[in-house]
Image 1: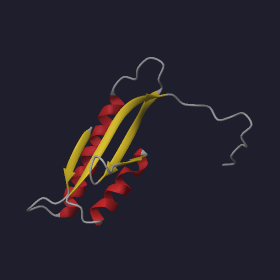
Image 2: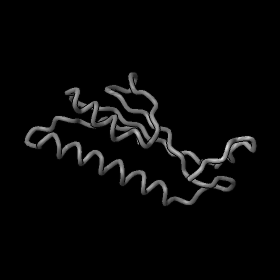
Image 3: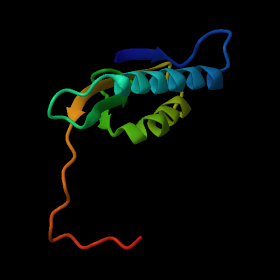
Image 4: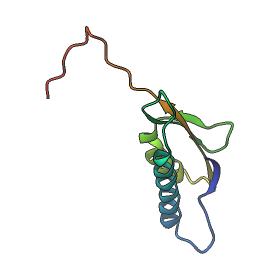
Length: 103
């Protein structure tokens, strides 16, 4: 998904516009994760970028999308560019010499 979301829509409260954008992000991620994973892959991973424009968008992990969206909305931007691209992922085992983590 590569999309430019308007943050200021006449007649709608800014918080509701932000909620609608977050809902669309969640729907897209769920839809992509339901797709069958290609041979040799174990899960869907996502390459995400967010920013004021396409040129100024910074790469972020999926978990940082919503906090960054909130921060950009607080800055008073009229719109925000969001890019989420799915790619097959493979889990990598931690190195054998890594110290065990106590739970």
